[in-house]
Length: 138
Length: 113
Image (tube, rainbow over all chains, first blue to last red; front, top):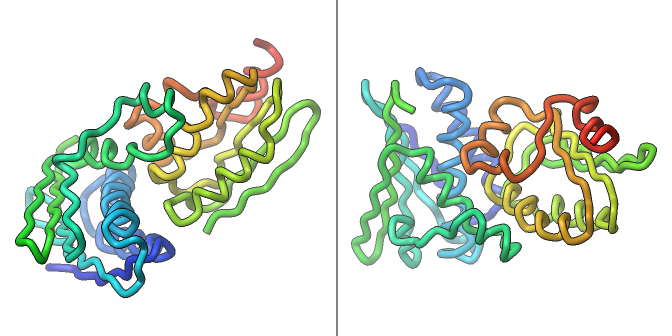
């Protein structure tokens, strides 16, 4: 079954996003910790899109689709903003984050550590970030 | 929803976080920490009622670590539930911040060090 959510680009909508994901993942076989990690990874990707690609414009939307097969959980996050390819983002070292007293840069680090596969596609008008979590894995 | 309460107790201050920290409210956490920054201060952060934290919240803590050292401020987090602790652990922040299970153990960091 596919589950869909349309999210306005407002940071206040992030808790609604988490509520939606928690509901969907409740039926999965993931542990409580793994569920929280997946919710976190999606929150991070959506927060980034809202802030960096859409400047928190509530008229802009993010389209989410979640589906599960026997072996994996897939979350597709689509938007039509300026493409933000997290695979190309050069993440800082933790020591650098601390030294420079910067607050950003940790989100993508988390996404990369949590998800088993991250894909990014852009058609020019629509961007898709596809996050995959293998079931029965890390 | 995030609620932050401040209690002055003996020589230390306790910040209690209740709810969820994300990109929409991490600035409140930032302001609360900024308000208790003072040289040689002892700051306890009670995370027992913290249900969720994203990188926006972790980033706030990270941005203060150098200042804590520079101002000789002791900072200890305690009471995190397993899910929240796991988020600190994924990035290795549990190696950079002292995290204790209980308030008693957190206080030992201050007064029995």
